[in-house]
Image (cartoon, rainbow, N blue to C red; front, side, top):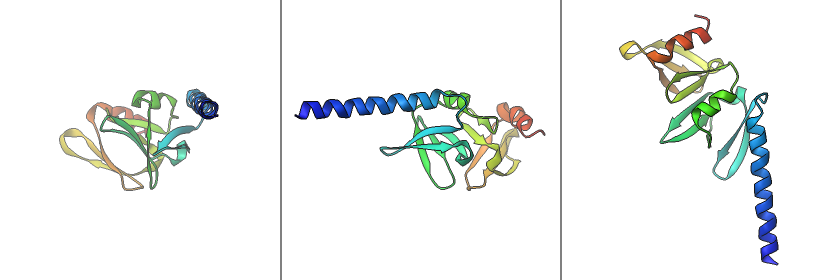
Length: 135
């Protein structure tokens, strides 16, 4: 009886993974599948403040929580809408969630989001960032 039960669990897991893959591949979706521990959640793009690589893992930040995602940052970036802009090699921000931007060290800009997250906009990505803000 146990082998049959294990088979159903494996099939269910495979089906869930396939469903997530389909949802993640749909470029018209305004949602991102993320994980927190063993739980899988779907975040609306409007809920996302920042997506950043930390310790070789892609982390998605919301108002109060953080989640992980298995995709590479460039793959996540491809699925996002124009509200998101890359500010450095390791960070993408939702421009709707910016609280303020100020000059920083060595030609970079400092950014603070409405949830208190901070980061620097590197010189390389500054022109693209200004274009996204129509500056």
